[in-house]
Image (cartoon, rainbow, N blue to C red; front, top):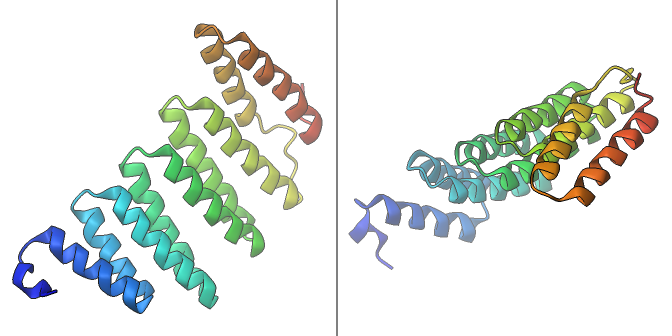
Length: 188
């Protein structure tokens, strides 16, 4: 293919970068592709590029670069209002932080996701993210007995399901609050 014949078109410039990145399995080329896609508003394809870069960096043991790529992807996912991709990227980030025992970074990542999901009224995902933050706090040896962010969002999840006539989901969330309190020894 003669990519130069269409080099003025940003779409084809992206396609050329993608082909080069695939062929070379080069994280820097994937990052260039991701940056271009993100700048033009193709956030999902940007996330794809950042995740590929992160995978390669992680395989090479270059964790700082992997984290930077995942964080760039997370920013793109949030710009796209894509909760599902934001969840995947956050959990990948937090896994790296947990393996490195970088508790504060992992907690921050989960809480950022929790706030993002809460803004979208996705209270199940928000509560889950905040619960993951609580888990890292506990693993770090911190007292989480006063950490009620997950409870607040489980309660909002209850309200959501009750308002939509899904009582069984509301009951599940209500029971889950009790289990959370038991597991994390949360004060009443």
